[in-house]
Image (cartoon, rainbow, N blue to C red):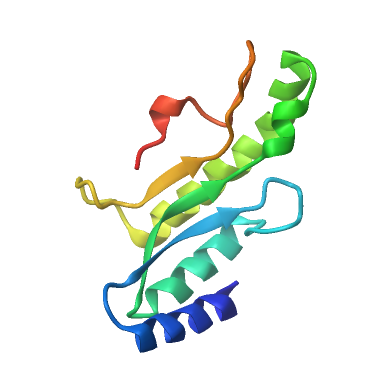
Length: 131
């Protein structure tokens, strides 16, 4: 949340050195961590950018429970909604910061998980994620 970003920014400023790199965590529906809407993600982005000792570096999304859905069809249906949220959040963040510059240090998205069986599905093809 933005209050946490301000607190982390203050601590990072006291520590000195390079800016601390932060990702915005997207809640995959477990309601444990992360933003739950594009609006919340943009508010957090603005809070991070307001802190000189912080640097926004991308989005993080981990939906481990989706890997344990027994069938491919059920897994695909269950992940479709979550993947839509990640796309909405990513689009809102891209719009809030303007078009990305074409360089390696641009913000990235890092999906989590290690599905290890045939027919696994993740929110997006791995080739569409870059860091």
